[in-house]
Length: 76
Image 1 (tube, rainbow, N blue to C red):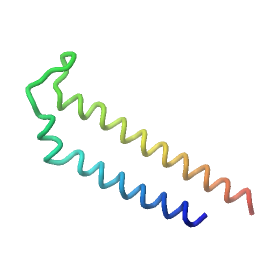
Image 2: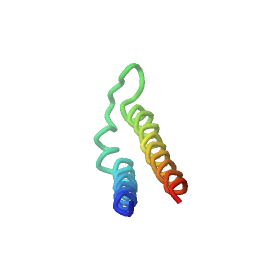
Image 3: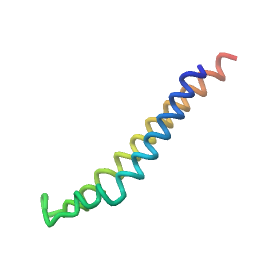
Image 4: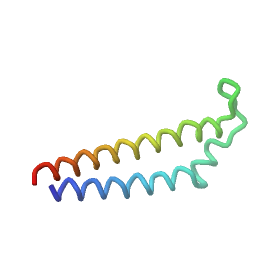
């Protein structure tokens, strides 16, 4: 069980740093182009897709952690 907990902590760190990287200079500069997709600027679309996607990842990890924690309580 400790191994799964270690994996979860490492995954949290990975996604945290990945989220920080994705909203900083190199990636924002890549998407800061005068391009419209469906009438929406590319940079805005990048944030409108990236933000909910990062929230979804947090939700998945939180649910996994809650299920794992509840399973441990039931065992004893």
